[in-house]
Image 1 (cartoon, rainbow, N blue to C red):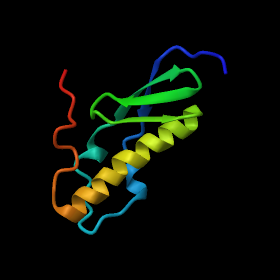
Image 2 (cartoon, one colour):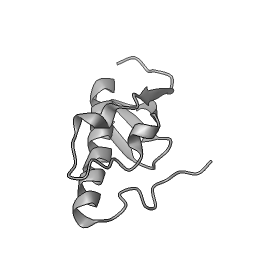
Image 3 (tube, one colour):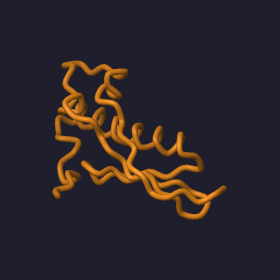
Image 4 (spheres, helix red, strand yellow):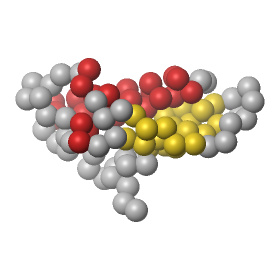
Length: 94
């Protein structure tokens, strides 16, 4: 695997629309694109959210993006079920 320079990957604004919720709330995800800093460490790719402090790792760029999306959408589903804000304490402030 050749080393890549870290770069910003922007998820489309509507990436979360493929999932439906009981009250159709998406905690503002459709209102903004989400940005990931993609970097490479050894054999792993790392995706660090720039708006939310969520990190994923995988062996390919495509998989690390998928895993990051899976993590954030899992937090939404769990937050909805428990009635809590899934992003409390995870918002990164500039």
